[in-house]
Amino acid sequence: MYIANLIIQLGFWISWLLVPIIYEFIPAVVGFFSLLMAKRHLKNIKPLKEYPYITLIIPVYNSADTLFNCIKSIKDSSYPEHLIKIIIADNQSTDESYQVYLHARNIFPDLYMNWINTDQGKAKALNAAIYKSIGKYVIHIDSDGILQHDALKNMVTDFENDPSIDALTGTILTRKDLIKKTKNRFLKFVRENEYLEYSQSFLAGRAVESQDNHLFTMSGAFSAFRRDKLLHTNLYNIETVGEDIDMTFQIRYQLHGKVILCPQAIFYVYPLDNLNKLYTQRQRWQRGELETLHMFFESRSIGISNIFSNFIVRRLIMDHTILLLRVIWMFAYLFLIPLGYSVKVIGLSFVLLYFLYILISALNFINIQSFLKNFKSDRRYYLSKFYIIFSLPIYYFVCSFIQVIGIINAMTTPAEWTTRNMTGEVKAFNNIVKRDFTRIFHYGKNKEELQDH
Image (cartoon, rainbow, N blue to C red; front, side, top):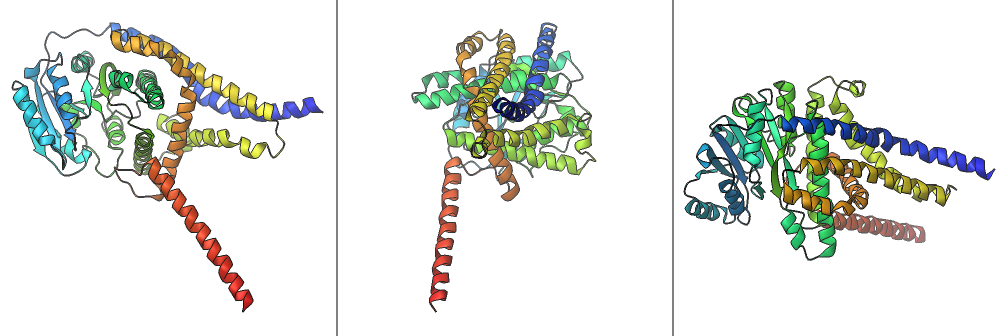
């Protein structure tokens, strides 16, 4: 009887394990071998004898603390500076950003830089700057990051070697120098997880998507376009916080263009300041994805029946349906233990799932370190953080939980660029609980008074 009951319970949990195996582990294995083949392509890229003129756009909003280092990274870049026009598009900054720009002009007089004032909003700033762009390619970078020395050269070289490419997104990594300097041990640990997450997201996830022109979104921090192709789009959508996803879809579906990753073009961004930053960042990403997908499906006759013919449908299922199941699965034990399910079986299933995700991370780790072979300091640092793959499953679960809350918020609150942070959410939750208990208390008190009368 015990064995039969154990088999039934194991069958239940194995059926749950099939979901991550089918939707996460198998794609990871396929992606592993796909990337092994893709790395051969990097060897076939020919260096350029001459480089074209480009426009580099930096949208700015209260960037006084980071703008100078961003401009300095352009100056220090290996790309010929006389072939770069820099447009700094300020969207209603209230700090000393303009003074920092003037200081940079004095320090780097050979850089061709323009400052323009735009309406508030990153999309509006980018659009205004695009109209003033010149040259063959338009590249935009965030003001709170710095370019790797050869990033611009590598990106333009990819364009010139493949005329079919219409847009490229760079590889985003967090700054390892700032991670090393982090004094708070817990924050440093979170930042190390974030570093590996970014590495896997770009050099595994986006690299695989690029194989079949299935890149879901370009990075808002570092992306590039053929200028003639960009001017045939509707430019950046100002109605959504997911303007980068929208632009990716415009180029691929409206213009039938090719959008892929340039793994050798690296842009370094600041690591997380705290968990509140992680919370607001992932909320914003989730909302942007939902808004853009809603507009995309509204304009096309696409449904669940297109799961095999359209990768966007598969991505939607993965990012939302499977995401929700993952979070439900993690909390299912709260309900299943009282129903008589074995604690040992539930514990075993968690252990199996944990090691499944570690195996996925290990496969990605192997490929990523080879992508970084031309960047010795990055590769050395990355290899030194191998132990982080054992905490990544927990980190990913926390991010998944935040994404689920993001889905709920996207359906219940209006879109804003500044999303309520985790502290704000907890405070709002506490206020709701207090309000509900107050209502219950007053309801009970009024009922007693009526009965007394």
